Length: 313
Image 1 (cartoon, rainbow, N blue to C red):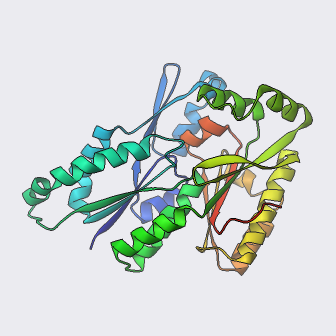
Image 2: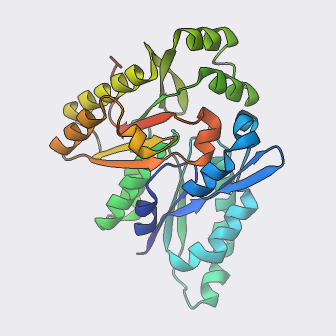
């Protein structure tokens, strides 16, 4: 059986992995003022877009996921020909409309695919499953990597589906944002009041950086540390503890809103890589996509893995 994997462009994974595993990307369109760009995970295009006035006004960005009709057309135009079963893994529905759009589209796709496949001489059934990752950015990538790993191992769609749906609730995503003012302005734009002006101003004045945690679609701070480097190191060291305690999949996913060489110079990074190597955990590093950058700001770092919930310390 031919199994396809599709995800939205807010999922952070290395481009070589996406190309090798033939992961299909659902673009998210970003508009800042009059400037518009479809996020297709092109690093050069992303950084060119976030310059000058668009960079200064990035927190005002309007993001538009693929519509129900666009998802429908993509499946009928290509995917129902290329695959027999497709897993569509999305950013958490609490932060993006792509999940609900994909679910709505799935109903019409399953009604319309038969004559499309029949026209190409294929009369076998087609099926798809939309899976809410319940997470964001690099954390979505953990689920996509696992789907690709199980596909390569020859697992059946029902087994893959059950495993991914169970695993999603145990995906742990952590982030250190460099600029609280930017983050506060962005979430205010989105109608989220979780970071007050006072907290942002105080945090900026004292150089206090929060470590944010996302799981099951909910995001909140788990620690506050003085200095971006110190906060990142604490996050890396916590991840090392989780690797030693045992992960649910052999995957560590990192994304960074800038040059990856700068991320690799951060304190604690080398320890994390060494710990992952020691425990046979594969590390996936990627440039943060445009959707992530406009939501959390340049220079943000995200780390994710699959593990049972454990207290951050």
